[in-house]
Length: 75
Image (cartoon, rainbow, N blue to C red):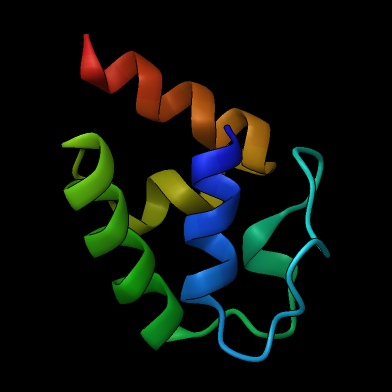
């Protein structure tokens, strides 16, 4: 999950490193926008080999649940 948090922090410009946790809701952060969505989906695809859809990210809620979704799609 640490790698996912790093990816999210790098995808959300102006987000201070260390400011999100597994309980953070990515889409509710003020830095979340369409560019962050594209950056995040590309980075997750490169790092984990998983294609995420916008609605999957929004429905996942927390970073922890998003991580669980990514793991379930890797199988």
